[in-house]
Image 1 (cartoon, rainbow, N blue to C red):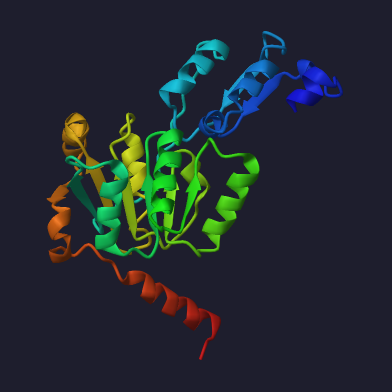
Image 2: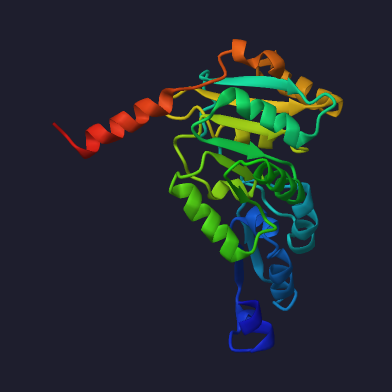
Length: 265
């Protein structure tokens, strides 16, 4: 659209009265916000700008302040059910690297599908590389991937052929799976609501789920804040993880239910 408007001049957006930006945070995550900025800067000053976004990250704020004058903020309640079936586990990173600690956790849980979150695109790419080097067959999904790579990753994820998915918070919204048994947070996000979004990807539809957070001393404030908000954390030691019920077998039942639906008696 930017090329047609500014370069080829085959599209007249400058006459538009309303500009709607949907999924603004994903637009920023995937690097298209500069294109939107360029388009808006060539539109009329009195254009009405409407922005829809599941989250409003700090990095999005300068853009919003630039183009929104006295905006009205409308919040829509989340329909996510953070049910009691989700257990929140804390694992101390200690002296190990993120990748080493993640591998310690993965060896203890043997997940059906595990969604692994990092706080930046760069961290997601680095973690995915290290896990692959150590033999993990995984999919990575984050804003630094090319559009074709992201499309391929989402298709692979939807096929449910991979048990491990490394993703950034915003990019992960392209994932729609029922069978996520475990979520691992590598550190806590700067914007704490993201932690709840992460945890809410498991334990859906009445199933059990587990949200595991690998933390370091810098995360103490975030953990205390989430506890005040009602989240009950259990602290565990990976060295003795086999003595804890970290494994979930419920997806096997899900497969049987699907089979019954497909082949009714």
